[in-house]
Length: 427
Image 1 (tube, rainbow, N blue to C red):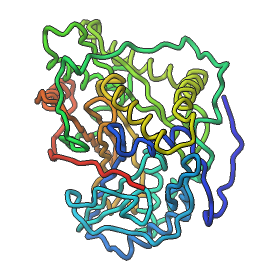
Image 2: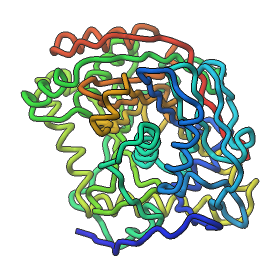
Image 3: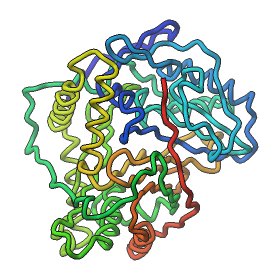
């Protein structure tokens, strides 16, 4: 097991925070086809008090300094302490500002509220979903003046670079085959950051029960069912009907390393013709084994090393326009090649009991940066929330996912269907 010394977070005043390559890339991707700025939605049981909310955010920033920053560039991107006052928007979600950073006093995130609903979206270069979820928990605890038992004193060291090791070859390291071609499976074009968004909900216990009898876990269950739903809609004449999903892996746990910076990777798992002829339990067990194998420390180190080596190629010249042009080109090439859809599962969103009693629901919504669909999942208070953002011309895939899930004892309810537009970051 790799262990790094614990570091203390110093005062956030007048600080410069260096970024790793997985932090720089989302900033450089701003404005491209693969920009990715996630959103949390929080539903309070009472109307939100803006004065209390602003106070809570300011207090939370004292503990999570990467969010009290602005994006700067000097031969490379970095974060610098931002002393500008907060900008909190009183706005419905569908009417909120679609540009943040430039419109939010340079803070690379924005919070909006209206009646009892709050949205929090952020530039992925500041932190990943795990880091941002801890910052959000702190805001909610400060708002209700409750001690945050889940407070995590994250380090500010970069996420992946400390584990780079070009000599590590991994343990039986293998990659899964590519999925079907989007050229044969037509998709919606030229929608910008818009997508059809379906918000689904079911009791978490139902998924856990299927995972138990299948000797698997939640992420594989969701991934398999959605892969099956897509396969029902692939043209008969297609030669390659494999469905490749990128499943997001939080690397903090296998590395025993806490960082506020991005510390996630993707593992591609592919549903093949052979899986159609196998039992659901056999496929679910295989998916879990693939993910567990990817989380072995030697394999994690190899994944990190390969990612860093690749990203370094985009940073040959210390020029902002060059960097953005490179990522834009990479996005055009890889968006519909890397995978067919993405699954990101944040696990249970824990809150102290006193806070949980004041919050109706927490949801996680993401625009698809790769592929034409993403399932963003979070478990809150016994309910499993799945946000499906998709741009498939072929309609009925989400409905088939719901129907397939019911056959396995998972009763999803579609509680909302809207056209969602991702907010983007501008310097």
